[in-house]
Amino acid sequence: MLKVVIVGAGQAGAALAAKLRALGHQGEIVMLGDEPAPPYQRPPLSKAYLLGEMEEDRLWLRSPDFWTENRVDLRLGQPVTHLDPVAKSVTVAGEVVTYDALALTTGSTPRHLPASIGGDLAGVYTVRTLADVDAMRGEFQPGRRVIIVGGGYIGLEAAAVASKLGLDVTVLEMAPRILQRVASPETSDHVRALHLAHGVSILESTGLDRLIGTDRVSGALLQDGRNLPADFVIVGVGITPNAHLADNAGLEIDNGIAVNDLGQTSDAAIWAAGDCASFPWAGGKLRLESVGNAIDMAEAVAANILGAGQPYQPKPWFWSDQFDLKLQIAGLNTGYDHIVTRAGEGDAVSFWYYRGDTLLAVDAMNDARAYMVGKRLIEAGKSPAPDAITSTPDLKSLLKA
Image (cartoon, rainbow, N blue to C red; front, side):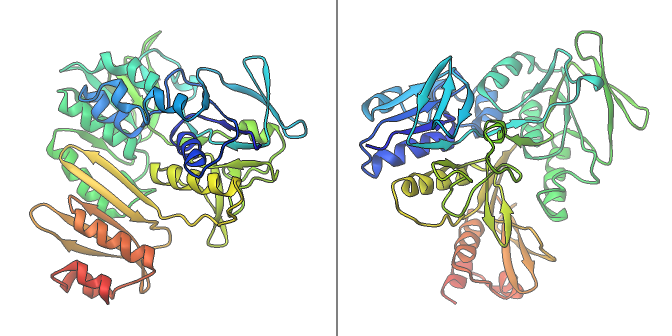
C-alpha cells in the first residue's frame, strides 16, 4: 500500500494529508515539520495573534486528535536534512524514512537584511512563524518607536497592529510607492491614505543604508543621510521559496520547485505544493504565495498522487486586514493596462484590472459583493465591458450576462 511522506507541516502539508484520507487513502502517511507547533494558520500571526486577540490553540488548523484519529504520523520539530531520490528516502533526526510518494510542502522563508548592514542586531525581526511573533510580542508597548522595512502587505499589516497598540510607526519603502510590486497605484493610494490617517509615517522612494546599534538596534541610517531612532525593527522585504532540499537532490528548480500541471517534480515519485512550488501558467511558470493556493494545490496534488490525473487550475485569491480595511483580491493583475474604479456603499471601493477588454483581477476594499462577483466572473472567464462595472447598479446581474 502506498506510503506517502510529506515534508512540511504547514497549510499545504496539512491540507494534503487531510485530503489523502478524505479520498480514502489507507496507506501510511508521515508528515515531517521543522517547527515544534502543530500545523497552524499563518495569516493571523501578524494581525489577531499579535494583537493578543487570538490564543495559540485557535491558530491550529486541526485539533491534535485529528492527526491521531486519521493515522497521520506527525513528527514535529524535526527538519529533514537530506533527500535521496534514488533510495526514495529522506533523513530526519538521524533516521532514514523511506517513501513510495514524497510531497514537498516546504513553504518559504522571509528574506533577512544582511549582517553587514545590521540585520543580525538584537531587536530586528521578521514575521513568518509563530516563534517569530512570540519573540517580538513584548516589544509592542505604547510609545515605543518601530521602523518597518518594506511596504508590502506583511509590513503594512504589522504597521497597522503597531499603530493600534499605540506605537510610533515608520514604514520605509525603497520603491516609489508602497505595494508597487503587487497592486495598482489606486490601491496603493487608498492604503497609504488609511495609514496616514492613523498616524503611520510612510517614507517612499527611501532606501535603507544600514541599521545602527552596538549589540541591539537603536535606529536606521537612510541613504539620504537621515538618521531615524528606533526601539526595534521589523523586516518585511519578501520571501524565498524553500527549495534547497529539492535543489540538493537534483530536482529542477525554477523560482521554486518546478512541477508539471499535476504537481509532479522532475522526479515522478516526488510532488510539490504551496509557496515552494512553481507550476505551468500562461506559457511560463507561476509561484503563488497565498493560503488559497496552498490549500487548493495541495488537495489537487493529493488526488493526483492517488491517480486522478487532473491538471491543477489555480483560482487565485488573497486578502489583507489593516485597521478597519478588509482588502480582498481575486485574480492576478499581471499585465494589466488600465483600471476601472467602482465606488461602493459607504467607504467601499473596488479597483478592476483590465488588459484590453479582458478582466484580470479585482481589489475590493470593504466591498465583499464586488469581490464575490469579480471572483466568479474571473473564474468563469467572463469580462464585462469596463463601463458596465461603473454603470450597473447590481453587480450580480453581470454574472448572468
